[in-house]
Length: 366
Image 1: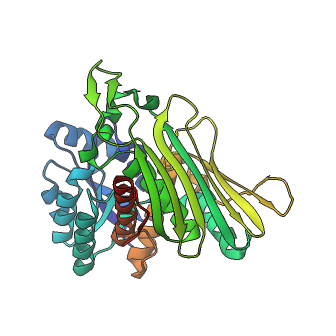
Image 2: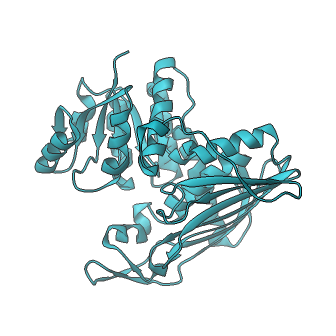
Image 3: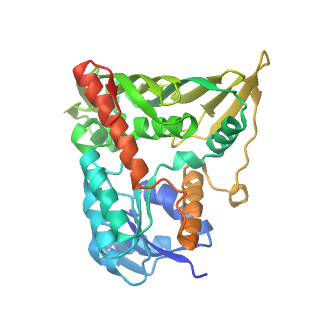
């Protein structure tokens, strides 16, 4: 079959998630071809076109989406622009891949999910950590009974962003709650989606959000900015199957950022752990899996990477696996990838966490 032709909105030639993950992922997959790129400036769009090997460059995302040589629109810009860009892609009848977070809030996410569903296009949200080989293998082992009946999940995930007192310039926008890209939305969303993917949906939560420092120093410029987005999430939750979940997720370490998700059951335990020395945050880290049964010691549990021979890094590798699954869905008419409906589910969870923290009450997920 002909390759699925992709137009990338937010394809900066200088830096950004598109250049780090989407472009290298798409280049190695024969089911895809990058035909169009879009940025906010004509000069950068043309540089991106040349750098990424696309035929077309745009500054108007509506024109990119409407172009006849684009089948799939990939949206890799900041969250406040997602809704407008999704609407443009859906209006053009194109499949759409939107990075996580899907939207600024639940209501916006629900409206976008309905819009895409009514249009009959394939829609996928960038919860790509589901495709990390360690996560895929852990899900298989849980289904096969490796841990027996799951009883608890203990989660710790932290990124190195200066203990909340100083941050690099690229991360400054994440400290503004109006951007929808703080620790709760990004790190919390990616991490808790993996937890639910493994042990089932959370049905109620008791949560606390904290912002220990209300100002932060920007390393690149020396400026001081107000911090309005929480950088600590503490969670006590339970799933529909009665699995208890405890989590501490935060952006406030000066060293040794890492992730560990430990699932304990009646027959054994599994642990998904970020590899030492790599980027912090579950969606950016190489993950390794280990397990223990009965009174046994922890042992490494190898996982299979279907794209191992393509020499992709961790970031591009997980995105490539998601794209590969999307190609199969587009070809067959199936739906196996995380869709906008999955994005709505995570948004509901995060909104309930925020409401629990505001009210000091334990709340059910709508």
